[in-house]
Amino acid sequence: MPDIALYQPDIPQNTGTILRLAACMNIRIHLIEPAGFPISDSALKRAGMDYLERAAMTRHVSFEAFEAWRRPLQKRLVLLTTKAAQTYVEFSYEADDILLMGRESSGVPDTVHDLADARLTVPMAEGVRSINVAVTAGMVLGEALRQTGTFPRSTDKAI
Image (cartoon, rainbow, N blue to C red; front, side, top):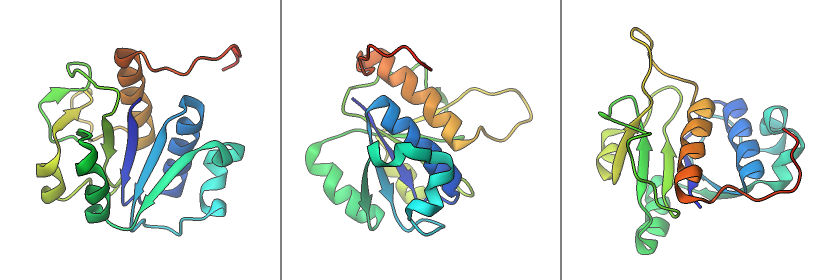
């Protein structure tokens, strides 16, 4: 099933929310440092609540370290960006894709943008800049899980 990578996140509440999403969807988060806040349970706990212990997270000390891990595994890097022509619903996902979310304040640098295997955007109404990174992660992950048939199976129907 797809993973989510967070490139140098700025806002601990968004990271906590995405970690909660990861725990609920049984996916792995790759946190590419440095983050704009201390990576600690207290910084993430408010949004992640008691789900943090269940979230699978791998920390990478830099983008270069992340790439050194990813490249040999031949996992596609799918960047979510406002600077793309293809929408996330027009893309064919694979189960081992990594969905890359940029910094809330500035996205990713051009060097990272250029390394992505695909660049996708979320269509939005005219005159708005962007959707919250955690909301975007949920929307795109949902489509990737649907297409790849990798939603977690559960007998618990609670939302």
